[in-house]
Length: 276
Length: 287
Image (cartoon, rainbow over all chains, first blue to last red; front, side, top):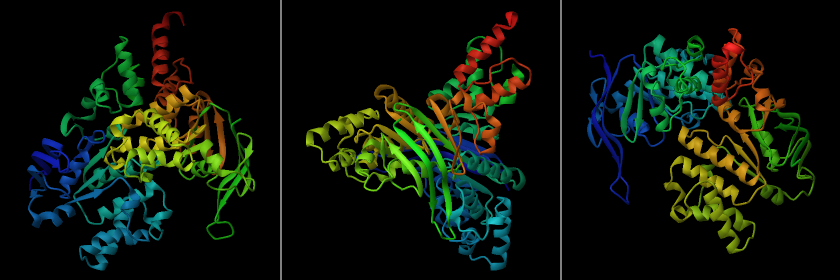
């Protein structure tokens, strides 16, 4: 077995449009994500990051180039269901993803559709709800939960399919700060404790600080790639494309400009306090 | 005072098993031209409060007085109030419905019964106020625009009513940093250039810190803290207990102070932090 979970080879994707030539959403992307890796993809709206997510989940297939998920070619229709079981997807709006009237039924929806034995479903639902720390809410109606809790239920629904990889497309964009924290902590835990490969798409920089690797997209291209430290040390470039850097990173950058001697790769409060 | 709220209580589903007290004896005052930040954990009562301010829902008890008129009284002219107080909901772009941007923005003014010229003028002004090019986009479908642009068209629809008070419920939710900065810039401009009274509901303490004159913190249906941003953000521990926080740079200054550095404790923006640290480092000799 290879260590590569996701591989994109020279992938271009064009959206068709009636009026013009079509819009190039991805432009010859090459990318390889290893099993167990925690990758954050940053970029503003229209940078191509959601298109990338849809390609990995075989919701769309490349206009040219190849996408492989755990060695399976997404263009081969026979692979589609296997790919979606391997790489589960969580979307931005929790209300659009929950289908049942009771939390545990919602989590069971995926495995039920796989035709799994009820006993096994029961086990998976319990495990998934425990993993997102929502077991005590199993009898609740989803609409009575907070945004963060709903999003964790959506993640549990994906977990119950036993994917090796989870792709999250701006899962925190509609949440308040405490909801965001809940979801981020859940994602980190799944990566660390369950060794799930995580592809987390966001435009919140602070969510990228703890990733193994950060990929910055702009106009369908990967323009920066590396550890959070190497990426965020390029404050100017990051700001130029309209993304945020953490306030302490920006402060450190401004102080350096004033001639104060501090390192270029400050990401956390602790690092800046120590540097001063 | 353009807005005065007295003893406002709102109970959803009264006398049923689902009875919830969303607002509990809220009292507050907002002056003309003030820029107010309304913060609070989800479920703290922010949305219920703002819906009272233009008469969308009625108090269970208490009063809402807009520009001297008690809008909760029997027979209050709500049409007038809704023109005076413009409310931009969360995800307002979901409410776009017309086939062209012009028609969508014109919908409100036409319903006010204004003349064609006046509607024309207002639509043009409103679209330009939100930073879009009127001639370029007026005949396009609102559904062809990007998320941030759609939202600005939706805000233009409210501005075309020429409200005195503009209330925005998380106007930047779900936008990327660029879209967020554009919208906030326009809102700031409305406040500065037209002295519009603005109430901004936001989860971003960083945005609140650099924009507003006054912060109102809601918790469990009550107003728990009111004050200037500098003073409110000094109460980091208290805010955290309410499920909120302070800007990262404020946490940072607090940490520096804890380690014995003599720095001010009312820093809430990156700019101010820079000045303070430069003062600290350069002024070491004569401090």
